[in-house]
Amino acid sequence: MKEFRIVEKNKLWFGISGVIILLGLFFIVAWGLNLGIDFTGGTIVQIELGKTFNTAEIREITDKYDPEAAITFAGEQKTQVQIKTKHELSDEDRGKLFAEFSEKYDLKPEDLVSIQKIGPVIGDELKRKAVISLIIAGIGMLIYITFRFEFKFGIAAILALLHDVLIVLAVYAVLRIPVNTPFIAAMLTIVGYSINDTIVVFDRVRENIGYMKKQSWADVVNISVSQTMVRSINTSLTTLFTISMIYLLGVEAIKDFALPLIVGIISGTYSSIFIASTIWALWKTREKTRPRRA
Image 1 (cartoon, helix red, strand yellow):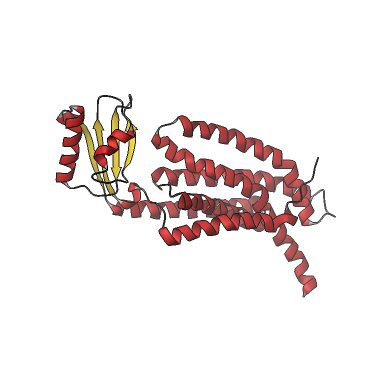
Image 2: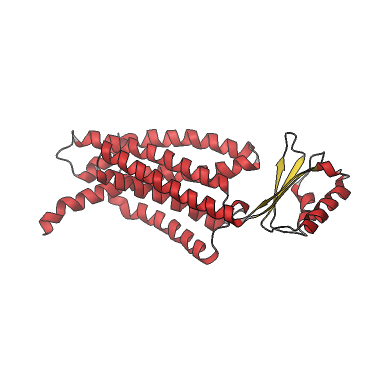
């Protein structure tokens, strides 16, 4: 079995992640995240058109009210259009909007399926609960890993999870992808998936420590990662293939959940192999040499 020199190339791994994260933070500070209607508030209008349609013909009407409105298909036969705009449309604007659709598609009043107003207060509550959920999940994982392994393993795992969250946020910030409610659910899923892969690597490290008492911490990690790398990559590829098919073939609501999962699975696999175990090895090595320096 070929042994990969993972720890010795730590500057490369940290450098790749650092560039992506810093670029994302720059975009977040300069332009902010592209928050969806779930966080900014706005109006959701759903109309039964009675036939299939394409977004271009819908935008001929909606662009008059909001050129950035999100157009999605709805209904079992995909004959309903759902219009999400960050603007809070007045009663007059909503009436004009439906009147234009009625004229173009010969609709009746009952074809107006629903109109929902979402206030920004709900968005603030969602953000607050999302942050609290991530913090609680992180603390719970730290306690579990500390109990099962040791505290340093727990800190390394949490830093790897933070890495995954920042990578996904960076991709969304740079590409200006809307952040909405399914994104929050996907982030929590990513955290759970990534920690599972990291624990597999750490379990092999702990097992090898007992057999490699004369080996350095870096060698133990290099051998352990080499032994689990194929398993980690194959598992991630299998999951990635499934999620990719869901993204390509699913409806818009599913795509909003699948896209961050795709980014998170790639980032989580990377952090489990190159980031988490490397942090632990560097920490243990520094701890061991510190008395000599003193």
